[in-house]
Image 1 (cartoon, rainbow, N blue to C red):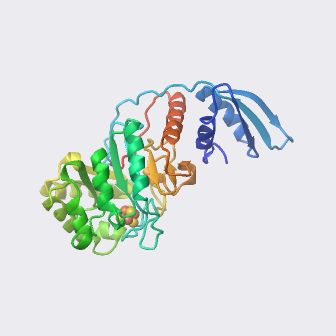
Image 2 (image 1 turned 120 degrees about the vertical axis):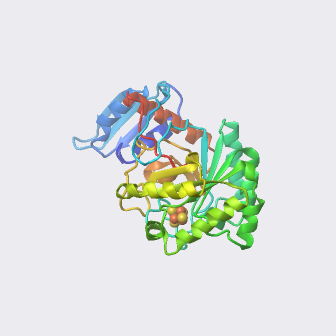
Image 3 (image 1 turned 135 degrees about the vertical axis):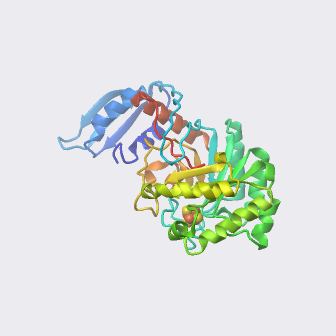
Length: 350
Ligand code: SF4
């Protein structure tokens, strides 16, 4: 590993487990690591106490004494005049994302989670979801978001949503194609309106682009789902995902949303992230993604668009949250020290 390929998070996780004054030994065969560690240690408030090459071409052993991490700076406000939704950064620790499952009725060309009907469900157990929400509340969290895969394919989604909404406001991300009738409609009807927002994916005003990305006739079914959800009294937020070269379709989409009376505050246009199935799109890393704690059945991650990227993994288990949150805060403090401007574009998913 090197510092651009996941080592930074591993370092932050590891040094977070020792006390101030104790020493972490890093053993590496990668020549770029010893000089990078010098920069990291300076920015993170640690001290390199020894760096030894076992042979002239490595491997190397670097000893790092843990110091006091610098405190994170509040990000400054910023704005962009392109079509993609930007906004102030969500404070670290305000939001918790829960991946309820990874299978989906669709297989969108840009799916960052590599979801499809054939994907392993990787169901988030109900008790784990609720335990994560309880710990998150105790840590001062303010907002929950449930995503997938298609969350309505989780067999206990109605119970999960009802119980989560008792704790905090919840946004449920869905393609809105599975609850027109049957048990999933019953599940939707049972969810509390006042604490649940449905964020529905719709990429374009007409069917061409949406169906191209998400499957034949998916546009019409999604429009029907939006109508269903609103008829049932839910707040609906519309989220489009576009490549840069598709950005000029946003005007037509906004015109459609005007006719549907979707308020501007409930519209979101995101760039495709080059993750998962997406062969093109915006490259993402811990330097470009504002961290948002994300839990899956098998781990904790830096951000919800990065759950297929091993370099973005914070923990190998979904619980507890606190050490992963501490790793995020320590990493952000280092990034702030490195970026005096203090502001990166915020990649908004909600
Ligand atoms: S982008 Fe959403 S709707 Fe499309 S395959 Fe992925 S999870 Fe399913």
